[in-house]
Length: 158
Image 1 (cartoon, rainbow, N blue to C red):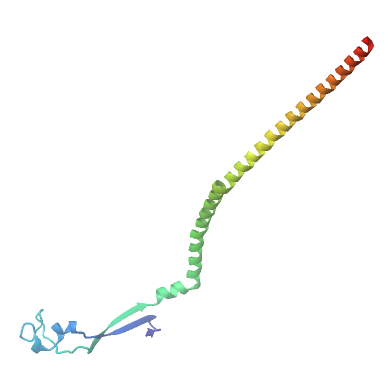
Image 2: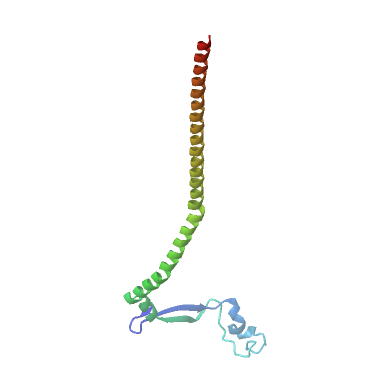
C-alpha cells in the first residue's frame, strides 16, 4: 500500500500462530505452571494454531527513492561513474600497452634485429667472396700473361 500524501510505502504481513506460540499464548488448561500462566508469569490467552493475531508492518519513506530517481541524482551518478571509470580505463589501457610491448613488440623487435644482423653479415661475406673472386681472376689473368710470355720466350730460343 502507498500513502502518496505522506510519500510512504507500507507493507503489512499478518502474524499467524504456529505450534511454537502455544506454550505462551495457548489454552490455559495446558499451562506449564498449572495456574493458567505461561513460564514468564503472564496469563495465557487461549489462542489456537493458525489464528491471525496482529501484523508485522513495515513503512518506508520514498524520499530517498525520489532523490535517486531524480534527473539531478542521475547526473551526479553519471559524474561519479565517469570519475571512477576514466582513471580505471586509463590504468587498464596502460597495463595492456605495457603488456603488449613486453610480450609482443619487444620479442618481435629482437627477431627483426637478429634478421637485420644476419643480413649485414651475409652482405659482408658476399662482399669478401666477390673481392676474393676478383683477386683470383686477376691472379689467373697474370699467370696466363706470364705463361704467354714464357711461351714467346721459348719460341724465340728455339
